[in-house]
Image (cartoon, rainbow, N blue to C red; front, top):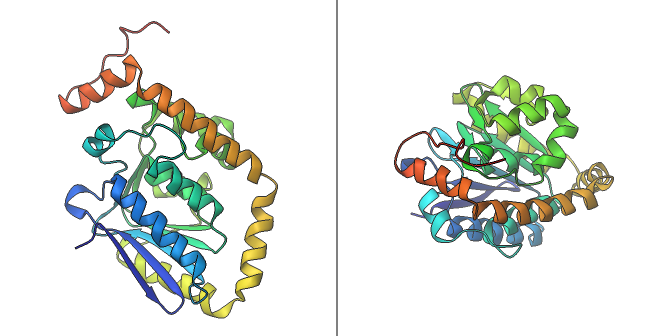
Length: 257
């Protein structure tokens, strides 16, 4: 069975991360499949809305570490960057149902959705600094504008867990929904957009909402990709990933600021 399930029903194309045994960790192949599916949905006039979710009890634990280290992103042609860029430039509404744990890009991709619903049991985290890396997905630009500088700094600099209520408070999500009801609720809402609202009005409204910052978001995506790749080759990142595989806490005190 595919690691990314793609299904279409009643005008809604649903993409489901489907590696529940690996907490839906994302691989290069999954990013490539998601880009292909999104581009196909963009070109298909019968598809009016895209819904993204995860199989099982996890939305996505972020990048599959082994796959990530074997094929690290090196520039704007990397599959992970193309996935984020495709989300940002997608013209139809994107709804995301965060059904459980969301880590790293599992959180930053929410910044490019139009509507996010999050399960009450979900835990979210952007652990970039704990891995010796920097924020990606235009998070360093978008999150301060959503949450305010102080809260965005706390989330990005500490890289700690936060809950569903906080996701709503900082503007990442529109609503908290009981976990067992989440997918049905998000699907029903997506179908309202697909079948009870005119597609042209939705697309125009989305474009106008994003227009003021579109160029800045694009620049942030590219700038962060450069810094992310640079930090990935740093001694701090090597220590962080070595510690991860050795199941120990990294020691960053050895490095001079």
